[in-house]
Image (cartoon, rainbow, N blue to C red):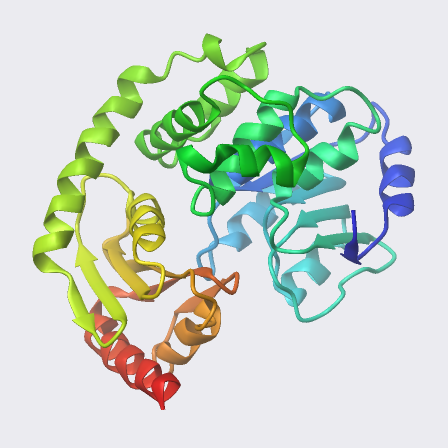
Length: 341
């Protein structure tokens, strides 16, 4: 494993120094990759005093920070997520921090109290957690596989699943693609309540024990209906496809991943109402490699307050205030046109 920042030695020294007096927090991204990472870490850590699944919204981290202080948390694992430097500095004043992540970064944040482990974007955080924690104790490989595939499903179709096993060196599992997709759909159903699935994974010895079919099927039907609506209402602009919709579930990433794989040469940008009526969630995909998705979104946010964007070259996301949808589209089309010159 090639680390772009950090090294394994400090991580294992940190792990060996944990004891029963520590108050340990695990904070993970609220998606399949973060979920798998949290399950793997929790199984090895053994005692987790504070668990949160988190999707970054500007200003939303402060209450969590204060809560950890009140609970006297002194060791924190951040999985599949980056932190602004100012917030990380504040946290490191009262706790030792481990960050295990694969998102692009601009600065190495390793310090006396921070272990900052970064790898290439193509390796999901769940895969990195499996690599690191399995050197301490055996980790169920099937959890690593579904967490890793959930983050890379846009690259591997059901027909190309053999490439997934080859790229990550995993053992083959029957119907892995279908099982992972069921998990992704169930996570959508339990949006904001990821711990429900976490608890099931923690006590399961295999995917067959997870009773999630009734939840995944409800979301599956919504997904099929929304894809039909997309074909009717999408807006095409010379290689850019923009689509705004208001589904019953947070299925934006599912739809855009599927449609992006089917529209390899095009750049897709989707906007969806979030649970917070005051904001919209934005996603962008571009499989051809001709468009830098996070940079395009960041430029489209110019002049829009309380907004953010980030992610990988081919897949990015962000958030804007609902009232700025028109300005966002205007900026987006202008910046995309510049790329065509």
